Amino acid sequence: MRQARIQRQTRETEIELSLDLDGQGEHEVDTGIPFLDHMLSHVAVHGLFDLSVKARGDTAVDDHHTVEDVGIALGQALREALGDKGGLTRYGSQVVPMDEALALVAVDISGRGLLVFEVALPQARVGRFDTELVAEFLRALAHNAGLTLHVRLLNGGNTHHIIEAIFKGLGRALRQAVEVDDRRAGGPSTKGVL
Image (cartoon, rainbow, N blue to C red; front, side):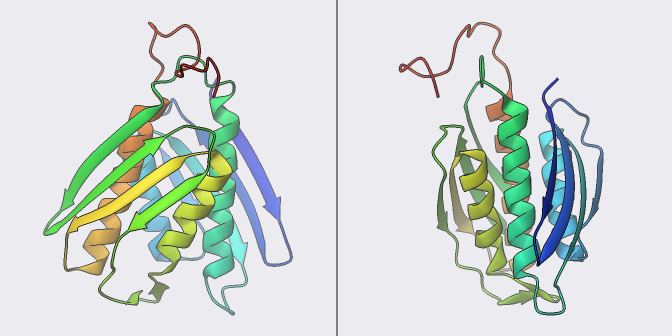
């Protein structure tokens, strides 16, 4: 069972998150930040992950702590659910369109957390959501899951469309990377371990 449950509590946030990598895309997400909820639903649906997130944070200050801490919790859950990583495909990549936007997302479950984010977002906000938090979320996810994550914008003018393409691509790339290859007896590395 490739599942994990994470509880994270700080002075700024309180998060309960559960993840099933072999789900159907069922999701129940309530972070108190509607745009983040919308994006996380894309990760679940396109990754075929069952995802439950309940988060409360100091959003009266701003959304930064909640967004980052949800990324941390999701990264921790992904790492835990992957276990020893035996038989993993390891790599996944997608080029995803959303109307005029086109985003490339590539992931390596390398055990080394790194984000390369080559995306210029045209607007500072989508509704009340601060768009610089997209990179903060992805960085927290990558570092805590042990992912090498590349995100590149190939085309786009509408900020909402760009971010949506990124999160859909993230779900689809992760879905590829976490697939188990029955022909792979050990770890997907010439080192023999990740």
